[in-house]
Length: 428
Image (tube, rainbow, N blue to C red; front, side, top):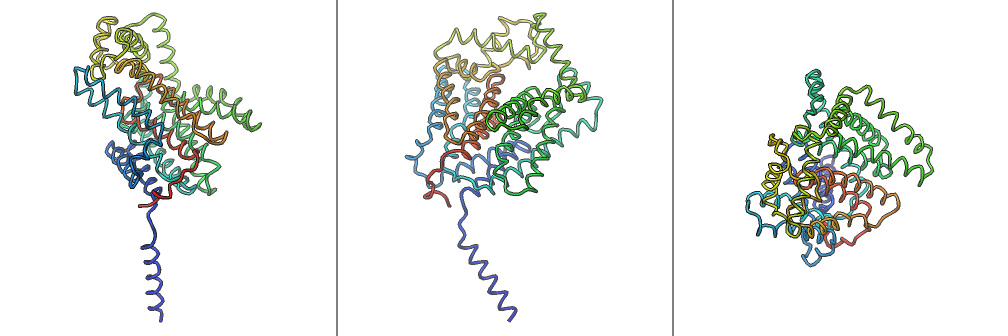
């Protein structure tokens, strides 16, 4: 009798599993987590996650429906300009490298268009696992400071940072942490479980503190843009006392952080030193921020000489080296001979001003996504944090930069966007 009951139970469970369809959104979440793990572990995971995410999203979607994604079409337009520069680029190998890095622009916006909307539980699970992943990455970075405190404090005096995940790209990792904090605040009302909220909230607090220990200017600037904007938003839109307290507390906290966190204090001293060297018209290129300013100057001169087609995507590095030799001959360190540390200037340098205009239109388009006032605020502030990166870095000229830029915008847009009819493509 007992055996019969067990067999019947197993049979019913087997029947349930055999009838259950695998939802595209479930697979998409797994692919997204694989992509995020790629930031911490391996480029291979990032690439594999994007490819699988695209295959899953576009399975059984006829190509004629692809044009529904207007942002994707605009992305195709400016990437095509990169591709067209093949005909006036001498260095075909470099052209291929720069073009290959733009492939996520062709894939991810289109894929997100056809992925079904995620449930609150799926979003909660993603946020929890991603929080723990990033916290582990922060722990890995901090471990170097713990093991050799004196060495790394001395290194900060010459602007050498703690090792980080993302192949020691501290800028991308710090900006990811800042954007994730904004994502968590955006997601907070959608989180279903109080225990999960405590875990995610505690993780974000530790990540916030870590950003001050790492002391990356870009990451800190991004997180404080968000913190100040959200505090002001809370005061204006929600008439919140907490928002007023937040506005007042931010400068106090920042002052205490600079005073008591040694790495941040050393970073501040280096910024002050850089400013004095700038006032003294230092043109040696030995200071990163001053090299960035030189790259702006050289690229503007080159764009003026080649306004319509640019110098060719494949020839940007060679053209900039010639510019350094002509305008800044004292810069001898190869590492500081940079392409423009501004994505708009980089597009104009490689492909011309018309391509830059198309790129600028593409950058603006996410702001027109429909949603509630709160959702629009979080999309706008995420957009501003990423726009900052476009102004101070050639952010879309690296695999990680392209992914970070697209991923956070698309996740917010996908969560807040209008509900779409995906009934015909929701399962595989």
